[in-house]
Amino acid sequence: MNKLNTPRFEQPEVSANAYQTIREFIYNEAGIDLGSGKQTLVSSRLNKRLRHHQLNSFDQYIELLLNKNSIEYQMAIDLLTTNETYFFREAEHLNLLKNLVLQHQPKDRNFRLWSAASSSGEEAYSIAMVLDDFFGSRGQWEIFGSDISSRMIKKAKSGLYQCHRIDAIPKDFLRKYCLKGTGEYDGYLLVDKKLRAKTRFAEINLTKLLPEVGEFDVIFLRNVLIYFDNKTKKNIIRSLTSKLRSKGLLFIGHSESLKGMDLPIKLIAPTVYQKK
Ligand SMILES: C[S@@+](CC[C@H](N)C(=O)[O-])C[C@H]1O[C@@H](n2cnc3c(N)ncnc32)[C@H](O)[C@@H]1O
Image (cartoon, rainbow, N blue to C red; front, side, top):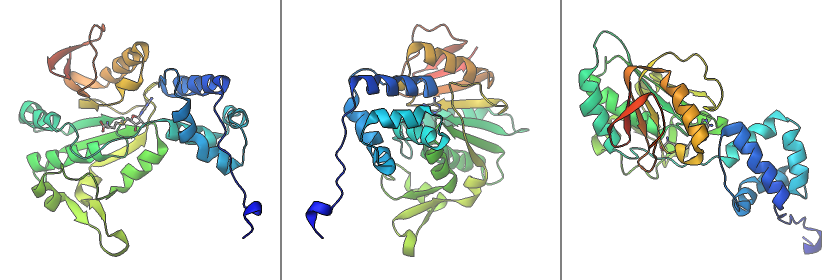
């Protein structure tokens, strides 16, 4: 092929104005505070959308985005969120859950846990393994996972994962709860059907009015508060706390803090709070 005829996509720069508009967009829609000077991050995350629409500038892209073109709107949210997660992340929380919470659960009703900001579902399924192991196969429990990213929720619902970063799954749990793929699924694992049956996922934006989801014994809200400013953090914790049973527990990420905030919860262990 003649090289001169090969279409080339020049990577456009994100101007200061364009950056400010995208920064405001993701703050208003998801509560995520990008901070200043993250033009390179924004450019690397959104460039494929410019290419997809054959646009030459971020100004053109913004026009499309703010036009409430719903596909682009969700795409941009999907791409601007950070979805890093893995099985048995911060596993001390799972030990705490077993030793501090599950022992004391009433036997006459479902134990309900919400993995809010669950990303692609590894957190929810890690907890599901712990619950099934603790309560036994007839155990009464359910997990609800949610995230703002439709792409992540789709992946979570499938329960299918590439076999990288699975080292933290205890070996007996791997044998008991993870099906190893073969043929075209070589290199993948599928979470056991009985765990998937008790774990459901939905798209929820935590900065908006929460839908009717019932009350939970425990809420995991880990590794997402770091993206919010104090005002957003406070609003989210208040609305999530309203979905906790009395004395229910809230787990946040190990590098996160709610220090000095006036909230209806009290610290009972590092990064673990109880509803007052
Ligand atoms: C870094 S992941 C954390 C996943 C998991 N909780 C963990 O600790 O491994 C953060 C997740 O928060 C989600 N997120 C960001 N803003 C959100 C919002 N306003 N509402 C709901 N989810 C949000 C992102 O889409 C992303 O999947």
